[in-house]
Image 1: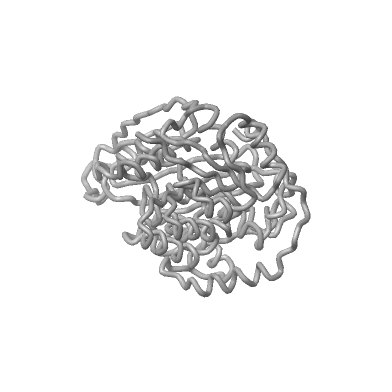
Image 2 (image 1 turned 90 degrees about the horizontal axis):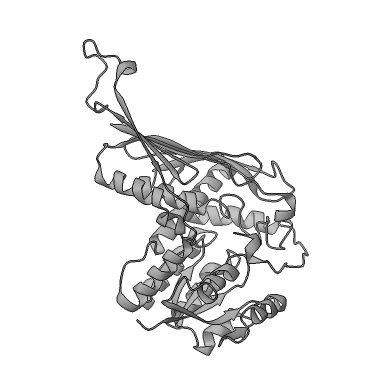
Amino acid sequence: MEKVKLGIVGYGNMGMPVSNWIIKDGYCPELEVVAICDKNPKRIDAAKKAYEGKDISYFSSADEMLESGIAEAVYIAVPHYDHPVIAMKAFEKGIHVMLEKPAGVYTKAVREMNAAAEKSGVKFGLMFQCRTIPVFQKVKAILSSNKYGQIRSVNWLITTWFRSQDYYDSGSWRATWAGEGGGVLLNQCPHQLDLLQWLCGMPEEIYAKCSVAQWHDVEIEDDVVAILKYSNGAMGSFITSTGISPGTNRLEIALDKATIIVENGSKLTIKELDIDLSTFTGKEEGVNPEDLDITTINYEFPEDKIPFHNIMLRAFAGAIRNGTELYAGAQDGLNELTLSNAMYLSSWTDSTIKLSMDEDLFYEELKKRIATSKHKVVEEKVIDASSIF
């Protein structure tokens, strides 16, 4: 098929490797990078050097790129507050959008963005590439089959996000309410929060505690414990931190007839019961829960050397050219952000938050934190993509 002409908005921690994967590595033959923009001239100089001889146009702003008409689609990887702003400008030009996570900082802006995308009729995808990881594809298929009945509990302990103070000091926008809009929930955990709602559905209510500057000199949260309650009464927990090492990455989903355990995003263990707990009362003569037969099934998924981002990008191109399905779209971005917004609001108000939460209240509370946010003067680094992956 004819290659999709793609513009890269933001040549930083994600824009640079995505550009390399398409231009240098050829992982996405359906896409052609025709434009790159970044407000930092040093990054533009680095891109020109890296892609010397390639027919690529360079811009200092997203507006210039969008006005040029060179790109029919854009991949947006800029600070979080700008995600909906730039995406909506692209929609106005009829330009397709692949948006880096998270969809935004607050759900009011994301709802507006999603409405604009629907009105424009363009393709709009979210970069939730963890959905394509084989272990999570397997878990999704198992849960969708309803083979093991309803979910009884879900718990995710994800503390493999250790970050140094140098990391937080590496950019003027990082670790501030005005620049980044949040901490571990908004930066590191959108993939896990997306997977949580994709696999298990949205909870009805959340209660959370978010510790600010627990382990670092930052404005935002770096330690979180959240309790979730689902419509069937099932309970769940989500625990994360950027101040723990070595950390743990363990997702456990208990169902009527089995418990599913995912460790480190590559190992899957299923412990099957020989009975259905939904029909087991515990009063059956001669049957003790401790004596139930359990069949353990183990799966190991080898590491794929090609980044999973490229599966998403190729699907994005397919959606544009052939109308095929995206892996994640507008509603998924809103769902994921709703979870983190609810956790923040619960912690800020010390209350249980229903998922039909007051978005105006959240935005007002966020603005209070933005108003006291400290501006940092930091020379933005030109990142070597090989140091990231």
